[in-house]
Length: 164
Image 1 (cartoon, rainbow, N blue to C red):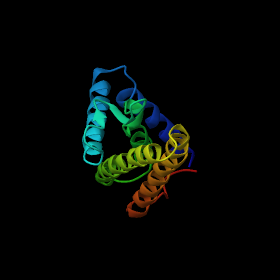
Image 2: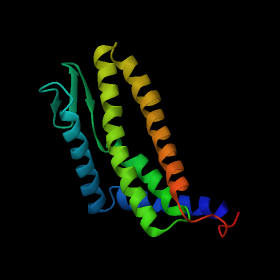
Image 3: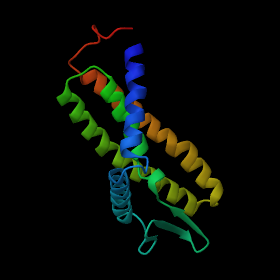
Image 4: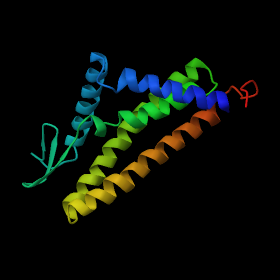
């Protein structure tokens, strides 16, 4: 268990530096691409003209901005760090990283739609708080936990050589 925790934090730090922090041009390109992909899928569900650039207009005085922190990369990195730290075959890890990426991309779009609809049809900023900060983040955490549990349950390798 100690080895898993140590590897988890090591991988998490490396992944954030390589894929999220705006230190490398690659991470900026990756995050911009993920943001554009998220906006592309959101556009299918929003009213015509509601999405302008990275802004989702709720009404003329209120918009929701979809930027790097809303593109779903952060929960993906937490899951990937967990998968990399867990003892399993490389092929199994690669498979579940792709599954996790696809699932999180879909769940993130649904999360943003929940925030948009709750804010749009509710009272505004009050609904934004509970739908974004509480329900939306809860949805991402539960998704990550379910994916990691499924990854562990489908792993053919045991933890017998993984020291406590």
